Amino acid sequence: QVRLVQSGGGLVEPGGSMRLSCAASGITFRIFTMRWYRQAPGKERELVANITDTGSTNYADSVKGRFTISRNNARNTVYLQLNSLKPEDTAIYYCNVRAYSHSWDGQGTQVTVSS
Image 1: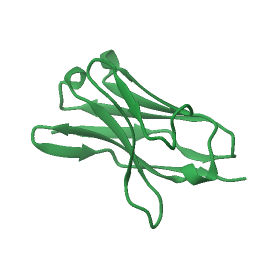
Image 2 (image 1 turned 135 degrees about the vertical axis):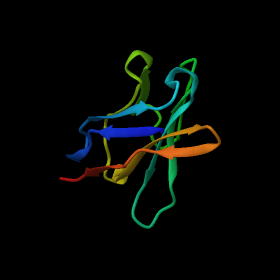
Image 3 (image 1 turned 180 degrees about the horizontal axis):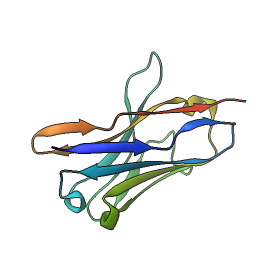
């Protein structure tokens, strides 16, 4: 059973920072690309960032230079560091892995950027 358990998130003021974590179980974590998506109210789900098994990263243009994805294979955990947050970053954030012919999401974490 693949399981992704997220932590972090909450309310932060514009310009602030926070870190999201996603702990995986049920997979050989180190061999899979991990992704972070987000979905804001009334908007489509957006791929925010991904990190491959070799550590290569890709980012959406909207977060490039502000967000950083990383992974710790010893802890089976992927992170998303969110800096210089803007109100438009407000969304539910999901970690994701595609494994064993299926796409698995974490439970979702609300990030709200507001003064």
